[in-house]
Image (spheres, rainbow, N blue to C red):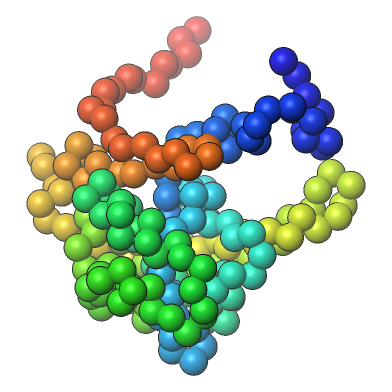
Amino acid sequence: MFYDARKNNHGLPHDPFKAIVAPRPIGWISSLSKEGNFNLAPYSFFNAVSSAPYIVMFSSVGWKDSATNARDTGEFVCNYAGESMEVAMNKTSVDAPSDVNEAQYSNLELAPSSLVKPHRVKDVWAALECKVTQILEPDDAQGNPVGSVVVFGEVVGIYIKDEAIVNGQFEVDIARPVSRGGYMDFGKSGKKFQMARPIWKE
């Protein structure tokens, strides 16, 4: 089949786009409002975009609390969404009022960050402490705003739970990340495998 994505005339019971762009890593973003209220929410439009320096991004549909807090304070933390915490992570996606602490609502303990003010989730395998570098509001191909907000942050500090480091490497088979698919689908990490990058030889 083929359909015009601009018309969204796929004729299927549900939009397949997010199922095609999958699996997606989950950015479990903690932030503080300018009044000091804590917020915790998962974002499946999340990824790394630079390695020198480390820069990550998350995208919010509209100015939700995470994007607003990042804009107002210049900081956020990306908590590692591991398999043992998928239920609590999903619970923090609740559409609660902005003054509700989603960590308390989900019975999650917090721990202080080292270089930014927002706390991390205490029991995560890793956390990225970020300083906001740029915020974009994308347009479509006709130049019209789409209503999304993309927040970029430089990773200034990285927390890793000691048990996740094996032979000098962060071991994803221990941390087992949860990923996002389309519809109501999530994925859990299976065993990793390795492939060397090919090298062009004249």
